[in-house]
Each structure stands twice: as structure tokens, then as C-alpha cells.
Length: 421
Image (tube, rainbow, N blue to C red; front, top):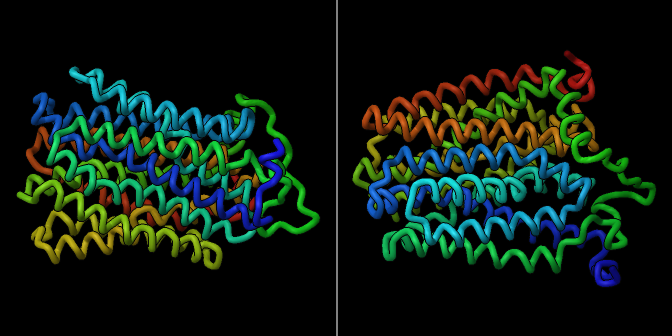
């Protein structure tokens, strides 16, 4: 305990925690997106259809979201450090074990079930917990940075993984991801205290009169009690619906199938992964900027703009010429908007449900995000196998984006939202 209580920098140590969690989220997101790189190599190595890999990806994404609220409750009741370290160990083991897979069910077990559960604890709910636990001021900006890490990790690692797959096949890819995940474990162990009070600190921006929120009420009471209260409100279901669309239109469709779509158009895998990397760079800018804007402007209007622009960009893509300039335009435009929806969504959830319930409620809302992503990952593979192209899937995703833009404007703000039935 003495080691924990001797943290330097005072309140500014919160930024050390922020940096470590940024890296953890980045690696977790990269692991969750790896099935998109594995589609073509596994098809060549084992003859597994895209629907098979899409099924594993879909199960992983679904569990990634479903675990979220339980992970938030585990962090509150049994400890953030224990939860995150256990998840990282599970992620490392799952990906290392997959190096020996020979059957489709091995893929589903390792990259669907085990990896999905592990990554679900090192995801947006972790970002929300860190933001509310370690920061009082600049929460929108902090959540923007942590959200950017999840999307940037999804996109930035893909060119390297695609190059590894092209040079050595699928097995070096999974071993590389396992090694990257293992390297994060000592960083969390050494540098992330359980909470500011464990380090003799208060959250960044807190005054001398700051008081911690009430202690949790138990795992099941925290998880399902928060859901029960939130589910009686329109605000929760509006946020759940829009976040379903967010997942449907980002990591579920584009994160999983864009490389395969480009392959259909004769674009090499490494070049297509480079396109996703460009999105990752611009996402880092766009989502961080979204956090800054969320601290200053109506988050509902921001969501309207983000979803509308995303829907239009997805409708545009199938009709582009897939030239260098056309794809570059899409990558920049879409990358800025990739997951900029998270900071305003967390802001609305915190306003409506309070600091005590907000991380767990946001976990349930994030579950909607991953259900949407799982639906798109699986449906995209099925539609591609049945129709021979991705046109219908991208048009469908574009329409859902426009629908989410309209729903965003119907969300009420503040405690009144939680009081409305």
C-alpha cells in the first residue's frame, strides 16, 4: 500500500492513469478488430467462408458489449485493477491459444467467446469509469481521448497486421496480438491505482470539499438495479437505439468488412488496411475534438450532426469509383466521425442518471452498441455470401445512420430525462 500512496504529481497523476488506460484500450480494440484481417487468410488456409469468420467476429462483438455493464459493476464492487488485469490475462491466453486452431469452433471459442469476454472489460465502460473516477473537470475531453483510443486501435494496427498476414499467414498475426496484449499487463499493475483515494489524492479538478460517491450496493444490485431504473425512461432507450446504430455503422460493418469489400474491388489487403489506418488517425482528431465540443455545446445537436454525416458517407461509398482520391475522401470524412458519438452519449447518460449509476447505465447503452456491431458483422457476411456484393448492406447502414440522427434530437437532457417515462 505504501507504494501506492507515494504517487508523484499530485492531482496530475490522473494523466498518468489516463495514458496507461489509453494504451490498454488501444490494444484491446486492436484485438477486437483482428478478425477483419483474418477473413481472407483463414479462407485461404482452411477454406472457411466469410460467414464463418463473421460469425466468430459477431459473437465476440456481442459478448464485448454484453460484458460491459457487468465489468463496470465488477470494477465498482471488486476492484478496477483486478477486473482489468484479469481481462488482459484472458485476452492474452485466448489469442495465444488460437495459434493452434484447426476447426471453425476453435475460432469461435478463442476469437468469439474468450476474446469477446476479455475485451468487454477493457472497453468503453473502462473509459467511462476512469473518466468519472479520476476527473471532475474536462470529462468530455478525457472521454473523447479514451474513446479515440478504442477506435484508433481498431484502425491503426490493421496495416501492420495485414502486412504480417500477407507475409506469413494468419498464425503470426494472432501471436503478435497476444504479445502486444501481454505487454500491457505490467503497465496496469505498476501504474494504475485502484482509485485516487488509494494514492492519497482526489480527482483532477476536484476542490477541497470533494466527496466520493456512495459505495456500491453489490454486484447484482449495481448491475441490474441501475438497469431497472434506467429502463423506465425514454432517455435510456433513445440512447440505446442510437448507440446500436453507432456500432452497426462502425466496427460492425466498416471495421469488419471494409478490407474484404476492397478485396472485391481488386484492392490489396495491405492497402485496404492502410485506408483504415488513415481513418484511425483522423478519428483520433475527430473524437478528441468531439469531447472538447461536448464540454461546450448541446450534445444532442452534436449527435444529430455525427449520425447524419455518417449515414450519408456510407450511402456514398458503394457508388464511389474506389479510386485513390475517392477512398481518401471517404477515409478522412468518415474517420473524423468514426466514433465521435461517445463523449456526447456519456454526457447525456451522466446528466440523466447521475454519477453513481452512469458508468453501469452507460455499460448497458454500450451493450446496444456492440449488439448493433455484432448484427452488422454477421449480416454483412451473410449478405455478401448470398448477394455477391456489399451494396445492400452499406445502403442499409446509411439509412440507419439518418434514423439515429432524428432520434438524437428527441432525447431530453438532465434529471428530467430520468424522470420521464
